[in-house]
Image 1 (spheres, rainbow over the protein chains, first blue to last red):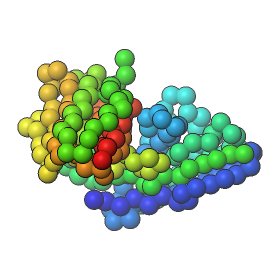
Image 2: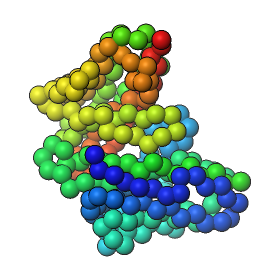
Image 3: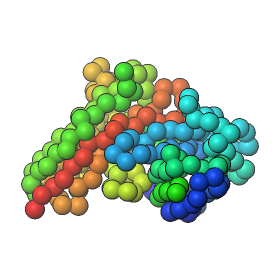
Image 4: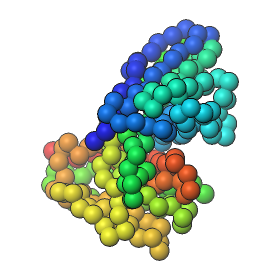
Length: 119
Length: 110
């Protein structure tokens, strides 16, 4: 399957600092990438849809000024958690949608995730 | 009502057993359906797509019932390595994003 690289895999930071997470599609171009957050024993929750060359679309309840998304190229999207606080500690996962067709067109491939711990 | 609902389990089955997971979705206009597998503290990985005609991949069989808005996954001859959380995933009708069920936790016991 397609490969999506996410970096870093683990971040520990002090409250108030900003953290940048990168998501790259390694062997395909992705006009659309997605950012999810997953708290322990809960399902993935979509935070935002990242569109190459345009503004991200945020889900209801997600602060766009706190979670900055940039999708400057067809292979790279970044999520910056600004002024992180302990309640932002979570597992952040990106995914990319490959340009399939037919019934496979909505398959998403996931990065390995970033575990953020804010002290 | 949630977009996707699944029995969270846990399901604890012996090696070699057959186990079935079920999932329902609320939006009748949904077009794409998947089963993903997620190991503890790891990212979800695509297990298989679910087609209207049903599909089989080795020990895994997926079925879709559009009339009942119901998806199933059958695992035959369970292996220890099948232990994971299985996520039922449905696309948002008319959009690019996916909706995930809360997952069904499976533990295969020696």
